[in-house]
Amino acid sequence: MKRIIILLLNISLAANIVYGQDFITRRNGEIIKARVKKIGTREVEYNMYDNPDGPKHTLLVTDVCRITYENGNIDTFDNKDYVKTNSYSHEMTLWEQGSYDAKKYYKGSQAFYGGMASVLIFGYGWIPAIIVARTPPRYDHLNFPDPSMMDYRDYREGYMSKAFEIKKRKTWEGFGIGCAATIAVAISISAALAAGGGR
Image 1: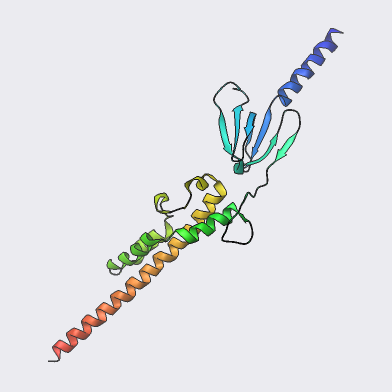
Image 2: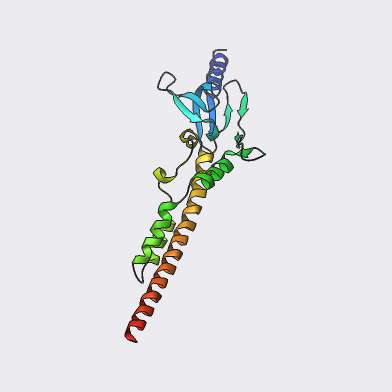
């Protein structure tokens, strides 16, 4: 009889260990053993399961795929958060919104002038142009309209991806214009020298 009681107590204890915690599944596949405290519109607040009285941790809702609670209930989070925009007649995902905003606000001026200036290195101008084109835009050059939106991973990735694409294009536009200007100047100088030598 004692063995049965001990066995039942062990089973009960094991059940509490398994179900006495919440599981937060992130989009990247990571599973966090936690005690969920609060789910807001932007963040999930929780304590680590092995330190329930310790510091509070937060995750962006956009990083969370699913929460399995200790009672067995499950909350799932749509992988695509939607943002209203006045510029489109339909709703866009955060990634699309970020891409759209980058197209609107990121000008890539530094890349354009960098590409143009690289022409000054005669014969080797294409090397710095390649380096500029292959380097992602600096964060402080992104010119995003709302800094709080950059907290959303999908929005940030959409914005930075489009900004990088724009930077590459602007670099080569600047390089092309620089080459054309250099050739035009060289032709003008040659023509002037030829005209002067003919006198």
